[in-house]
Length: 243
Image (cartoon, rainbow, N blue to C red; front, top):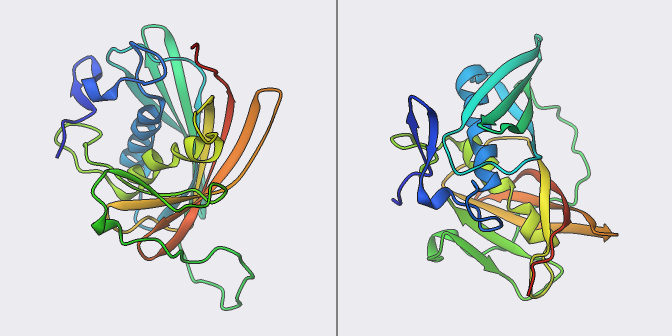
């Protein structure tokens, strides 16, 4: 087990060295903010009878490498639906927000629904050594297994939902990377889940990319070892690195 990304202190969630962004020095990696908000929403509003079916994370400002505070509020509390929002705040103000929809689990309708989403012919993730392992020789069908080796918060075990929220951010580099370089940085991502992932590995398979005038949209199908669990869509803006 690697060191945790954050330690909970009186000042908030203090980032460790592994929480640094590889886009901007001195900043916190954006996907970890999504993980913190997913953790907050689940800890505060999660219930066994409800499924977190959607999580949208907006990352509209760089988060300085300093302790952050996370808060949340319920927007709608209903019999079959719960909607809640979370925010991440730093010394420069609010840097990210998330909205989540929970739906009450119930009886599955008997009728089959046509779908092109099926279990994939991926290698067994247990045989792959790296925490992020990409495979396949078709550049239009990028696929990877992700295993999160660091706790999000020191002393805590990742829940399946938070694990999925952390993995969902990888839809951007998987869908938006060229053959040689990633030159789009995502401004947001939306995770939709029909069920929580099983096990420690989450798989992503690129499903599409469209871009023009420096604006990109793309999506991936998300899997666990038992089959597909949902989708992640990322919206990104061109961020060409200086040579």
